[in-house]
Length: 208
Image 1 (cartoon, rainbow, N blue to C red):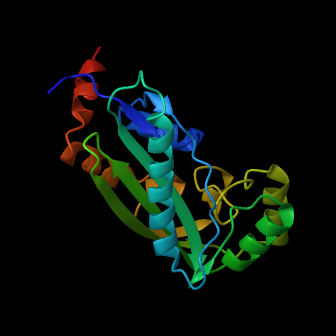
Image 2 (cartoon, rainbow, N blue to C red; image 1 turned 120 degrees about the vertical axis):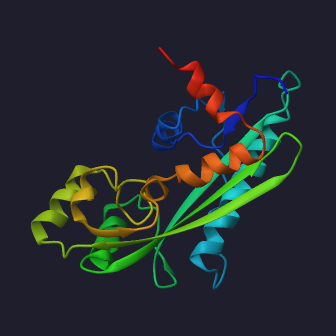
Image 3 (cartoon, one colour; image 1 turned 90 degrees about the vertical axis):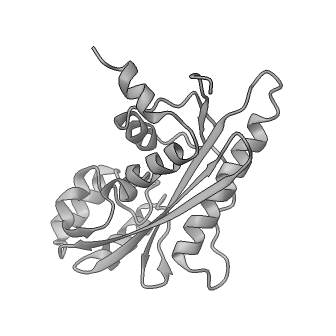
């Protein structure tokens, strides 16, 4: 097997790039995938996360194959969905959306589903769905207003970023912290290793 292998990340998310780098993995190319993320009628939050991660991977693969100079590559995609019961919370873009999310999450538990999809150079599709339970403290008016003013919530599922200021809201987490951030490292690395991507070769190459 050739030592050189290409990995395409179907995302431009800085947090997903940083998580991969934390695991010693440097994506060779970023292909953010623009897809319709609207939930289907009565779609379960976990099913949505799994479906969107696959659609992102397939879209990135479609774009990647249009370049005749590119060789085979692993295509990696992920999508994160926050829910309270079966109610899917938006990726907040407006302050009112973020405010509604945070008021709903205040003082209660919610679930974060992260779907991961890997398309191998041979065309195999591998998927994982990770579920994490998160409990928030009851937010005071000052905490809510200050967090909204920070703008950190913008574009984040459920209106918060656990790797940022909102970490101070988390009373309990059961599951994958990195999954809530956006890319569950344990499951992602296992998917890559199981299908021949030499993750640990990168670790050796990083030795001083």
